[in-house]
Length: 66
Image 1 (cartoon, rainbow, N blue to C red):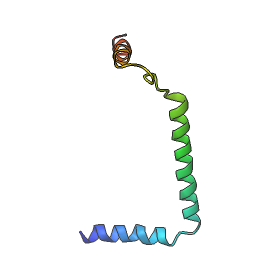
Image 2 (spheres, helix red, strand yellow; image 1 turned 90 degrees about the horizontal axis):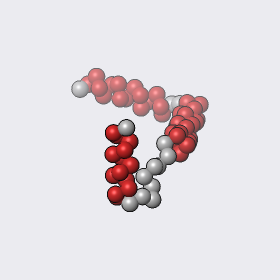
Image 3 (tube, one colour; image 1 turned 90 degrees about the vertical axis):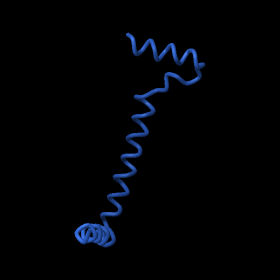
Image 4 (cartoon, one colour; image 1 turned 30 degrees about the vertical axis):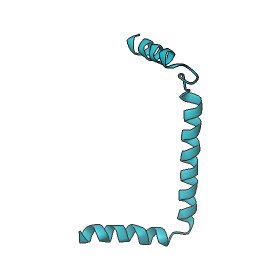
């Protein structure tokens, strides 16, 4: 248990003393968010949007059995 506390304290103190690192982490997080948002929008379209339940079930069945 003491080892876990020491590891957590090590990381907390390290992040607390960062100056440039905080900016870099913020840039990394923004970049990942944009990357995944763009990938989801352009490469994973919602084929089932605007369809009734019966049309959805037929589409899913057709995709699974082909």
